Image 1 (cartoon, helix red, strand yellow):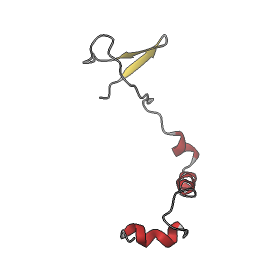
Image 2: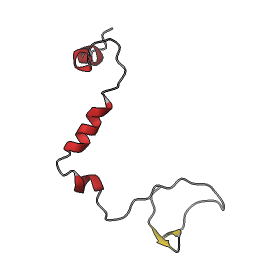
Image 3: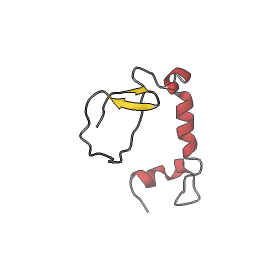
Length: 80
């Protein structure tokens, strides 16, 4: 569920009642309202994000000694 809350005196206070039991443990993800992502401001073209993504594949496990580009047909068409 997504709820709006206010941070006051070190405590998050929901703006509406929550359907939770007393002392029930929850997991919270905090997103500032109206704030743009730092990546959008720092990387307007998306190039840095693309390079990070490409870098994830440098150490990917392969089924053969060939490069990922050489293996792509085998992966796409499930050839063994």
